[in-house]
Image (cartoon, rainbow, N blue to C red; front, side, top):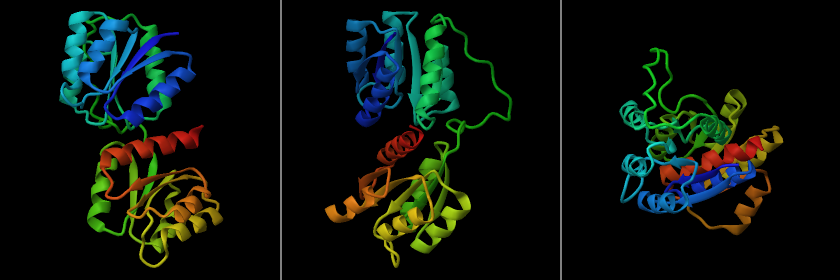
Length: 264
């Protein structure tokens, strides 16, 4: 199979994608910065490079330009949570095989990579023609439903907006009863929940959802390191735990992992 270089400064995402690609029989190299990616590329000359756009020291577009200077026909895919039409146009002018959002399922990303491996790579590949006005915004090709629960309205709104901009259909609740009502109505694939809710506590909400045959996953947010509480939550099924305050980028990775676990 192919030798693939995965470049992303989010180590968890990098390792997750690497594990999935190895499961498909590929040899995977990883780098967590643009400069490191260039060193690995020069040394190993991978058949395919999956490149994040937003990285420290050297961003993905600059790394792409330098890869092109080394090998004009190198196959490169851009994979980012921060895309825009302008950035996509720049990348396609540099001959990328695809420009994808991280919010897509990893199965979709791998399928695009497999198509790229079958196509002859060339830096002269022309940009894709403009699509029709009905085109979905960047990151909106697939819509997984998430129920986001936080007792702080501003925090809930901020995280909801962040996830919505990356293609997820997000419903927001602030207390236990609202969660239970929304879960029945919208049937989310994933519940992202603050464990310190007023009234009905987070763990009791999770138990009630499971009793009501909810089969999705949980991402729990908490400012308290309570081992007993965490064990009880993990015993209820697929879950992840994030310490508060939660960085939006870290939440995005937890959501992607949670959805992958549900599909496997």
